[in-house]
Length: 128
Length: 68
Image (cartoon, rainbow over all chains, first blue to last red; front, side, top):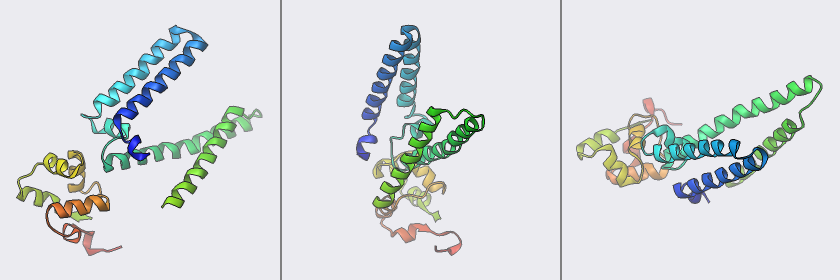
């Protein structure tokens, strides 16, 4: 599985699938005027990361594909982003609770985030 | 952790890119190892040591003789 995730062609294919899905959703919801620019932005991002990673170390790390150092830095970056979100999401949710109107979507997001963290910890702990 | 990868590479007249290619890692990774910004994994450290025909301990030394 990790070899697959470290394959740039699989990554590009994945990004194209996400782009197609997002464009489809936006097209259905808001029409081509919203879908096409959004799709163009996603395609541009995919192209920048894919072609730029050969030249720029930061883009290579962002792509997550490469040698052990790149994968290690990518994992650390994701962990930092996840740690930040682990504060932002509950804090934001608590603000809505304090306002007397808990946001159900934030509640769900926090629950998913927490459950994902617990499951990931269990998996990693058992493997390690 | 200190290492003498740069010196050993220099003795053989290799560029960072050459060494990286030989070991299956990028030039940036070799640079990061040489400047101490990145500690290689055990397999990579062993591959590096074998490439230069030395032991891992001869190539990588803890700072100030400190061993954890």
